[in-house]
Image (cartoon, rainbow, N blue to C red; front, side):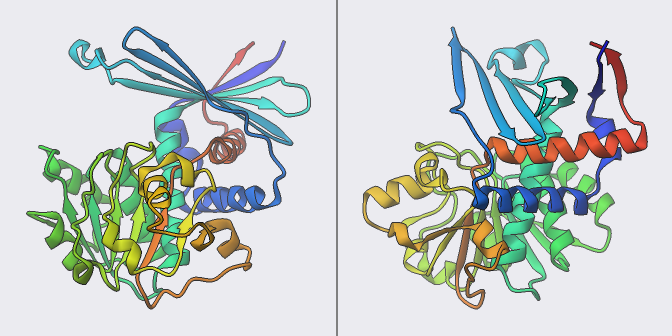
Length: 323
């Protein structure tokens, strides 16, 4: 018999710290630079209005397979429209090791990516943060930002979130030293912030197309992950010297880069990976306007799942079943 570990959200929360998650994703970004991994193409299966996404990753010791189901009609039934899980296997034998809840795992790895983006592309003395998009991803972005920088003020803008007060109350309980403010519009959010995180799925820019407003600011783009999605205006790209991305695939996967490359508004040789900043191959001038863009990849899921699994085993968390 083979023992397999089942880990839910509470197990994940108890298993790793913010610093564990940051270290895990930093290792993943370094591994990406070495090329010591294999990421097959994502499988996209559509059935009627529903979608199943399968995202495998091979990384030596471990194999991960992320499964995401998107059922738009679930909201009418009282269920989330998206469910996710990560299946972790032994890289040498294929033996099943763990089944891990996927939504929190994804939020943690995305939060860690955003945190590392801030750590390497923004001034160390930055204390004010803006957030456009008050969803689950935005929540974890603020937590990780407050870990890598001494954030004292957060300004939140989201015209679509009705319970933004609950969102802020939850963050306030975890970050009691931070002052939170609700902005009436995106311009107010940006004006009052040094670092601005966008975490929306908008198909049109949520950041105003005003170069004078954007100059000298530091942008962390988390939301857009499809060619049809854009969070940033053309004017931003006239202000920056370099675009930093979490993965080279970002050039094809997000409209924030793909459309601008096609229109020659940015040059491909101005795009570099965050891993190159981490390993010292490149540097970014944080005194000017900076831009970091994340779209994520299965390798990051593999590394964070590996860390959660190992920490959970150490702490005897989760439920073991005979497989």
